[in-house]
Every structure is written in C-alpha cells, then in structure tokens.
Image (tube, rainbow, N blue to C red):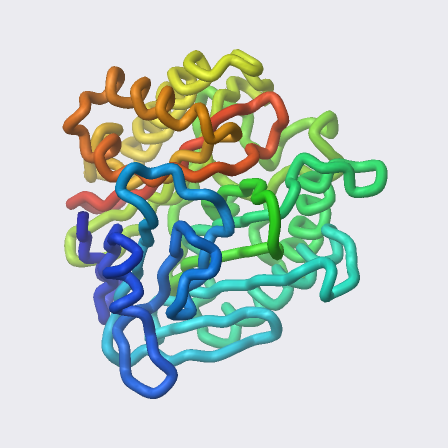
Length: 346
C-alpha cells in the first residue's frame, strides 16, 4: 500500500515493501536519494544501513520494511547519537545505544537518547514528533530493583520535561517493545506541523497511569492525527493491547487479548474520526503485530482473519514480530498507520 502525504512541499510517500525492495531504495553515501528513512523488520544484520528492529520475523512472506520517501533534496546528518535524514519539511531519525558500550543504566541511556533526539529536532526545524518506535532489550527484566521498562520511562520523562516537550497532553504516538538482544533502538518521524493527539475513551491516558506502574508514567498518546495537506490525513496508532482503564484484562489469555486489542483499535479510530472528515477502516491498516511467544503468531493471524476477513488489507499486509510487551501479562500488541482523504476539524 502506498500513500502520498503532503505538508506544503515536498510530499512524503509511505510504502510497505519486501526488505529486498527497500534495500534497493536505501540511501547511499554519495548519490542523491529520495528515501527519508525506513524501518527494516529483520534480520538484524540486514545490509544497506537501514535501521532494523532486532526481533525475529514471523511473517509467512519474510522480512519487510516500511519506507518513507520524500523529495530528492534530502540531507543527512548526525546530532549526538541521532542519525537523521531531512528534506526541510519531514525528518526521519534513528538512535542505537548499547548499554554495554556506553556503560550506563537504562534510565540514563534513555535520557541521553531523547536529549539528542530533541536536539536533532531543533537543528533541523522539524520540531514536532509524529511517531516514535522504541525497542528496549529485556524490557521486563529487573534493572536493579525496578523493571527496565519503568527505568526507561523515568529517563524518557526527564528528557521530555527538560526539553519543554509535551510529556502529558499532546505527547506523540509511540510504542515500546522488548527485544531479546542488542542495543536500545529508537526510530522517529517528525515534521514542521504539530499533529493532533488522540486518546482512547476506553482507557486511562498512559501519561495518567497511577504510580503502581512506576514512578514516571509513559510519555505517549494513544494515536496522532496529522493534517498533511493535499486533502490527506495520516493516522498513527500507538502500540495497542488488552488494557481497559489502566488495567490489563484477560491476563495470559491470547485470543481474548486479541479481541480486546481490536476493540481498542476500533475505539481509537472512532475517537480520531471525531477530529477529522477522513474515514479510517480497521480492516485497511498497515500494522505491526508483536507477539510474546513465536508459537502464537499463527493463532493471532487466524483470529485477525476471523474478525476482519482473510482478504482484509490489515490481515494480508501485517508484519509479525517476536517481541516482549511492556507488561508481562500481555501476550500481543498491535500498532498501525493509515492515510485517508479528508481534513482536520477546527
């Protein structure tokens, strides 16, 4: 599925591709290239310099990638730990920091990563985050008296506050998944126009979670809508799981969790549509499905087929990855994006 996004000029195209096709588009060191960025879904040693999610790919079709293409006038740069490409209107960036090399803990590492990220936004002028992807090794592990995900949230929150970024209302769409090995990986898409943050009426906003989930709540919104010009609106849906209110429901039960996740995705879409004339379809998303246990992928795929139809775009083009979810009692999480014709409502 290819969508053309507009933010004045130049346009940005979003494409889900086989990894081999994405590698053919990968930016070179010397030649001009219209690829703003891409996220490769395995294997971790993929050639071509594409930022990779270091997780096992469970798709029948093999390794995939989401590529973001802009104008031919894309500049590359580095700011601290951030590697970025920017055309003056859109920016894609990647950060990879290894705790063993940096010799620091998760909270400090997350804070450093996000400080560099916000410095990169300021340097390019693309100061509005549209979407974030966070991949943390051993996310549910004990980091010396506190779960590693909770430590990550402490460092991320501190960087948001110190940079004057929205850590509560207006926080960007994001996901945070656990990989089994490798470095902390952060990928992000930013632009010059602020998106509209969307919350799920079935859930407590993540940034309002009680301290039962850690000393600092996660800094993200359930989704973001971007009025991207040319009559198009983009919807970026954060990682979504079987949570109602702030509590996990159907703990440890795979199929009920899939069904609850679909209800939450539908609720997010409905909440987003209250802010735009654009219409989005649960059956027409480009999604990534994260499963805690690789053996569950086929069951999740079957559940999505039964709910949405085997010919649904969401089903046919989904990427499946083995990854730990941010709560140990969650078995599956789904994040997605989509583009539709329309405009934001005042």
